[in-house]
Length: 299
Image 1: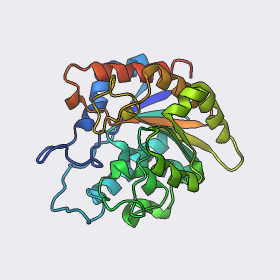
Image 2: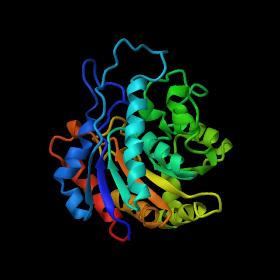
Image 3: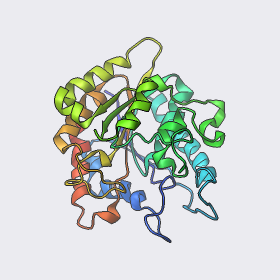
Image 4: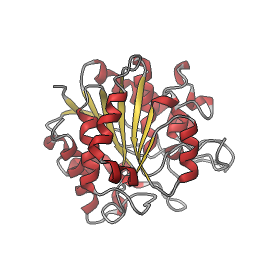
């Protein structure tokens, strides 16, 4: 059995400010989950922290591309170095974010090693790019597009490895049923989408097992699991930047995660977006820690 290694990636570089003069509080996610004893409860090894650059929009304006781009590029490389080290050592990295742009570090690390896919468990597809939006800027809502080679080259072609992910190697879970137009674009690109409704109709366990099996096909080396806390319903997880209604219940999310994380082809896992600033009593953070621990219980 591979050793779990908990690694902090407390970057908020990919989110817009929640209010003028403030910074997104998701950089506190790792500390909050550590306060819930997640390292000990997972019986994991300590992996330390990859410290991000300072959040600074400077004189960025709409139309300038992705903000914090230079900082994001530098951080992606540093995080990829650490993730690659653990994967090569046979460890299983558990990366505590941060916003969703940290997934670029995982994708770059695995691209160095071969052909890996992504199981993205998220309320939205994070596939915003110039071909479908005129509001490019926040990498935390664009990281899947960037990882598949869509966007500015200083983020999409690090180390000349564009794309980090092939379109057909991306799987989405938990997207809200209302996002039909977005789903049409993904379907045209042969990126499978499993909505909340699909999960309830077909069963989380069955869908997750079938997805894990697809990554056993010849030519693929494995996959990474990306979890955005906003996939949970706001009734239990209000502490996110975009709390969309009609999300998954905690038990459904655990049932979805377990087969994915238990797969021998799963190379690692990250969790993102939970914002302790929006959770003054810590209830949502405690629940998120429970979900992560329960998801690994049978892996």
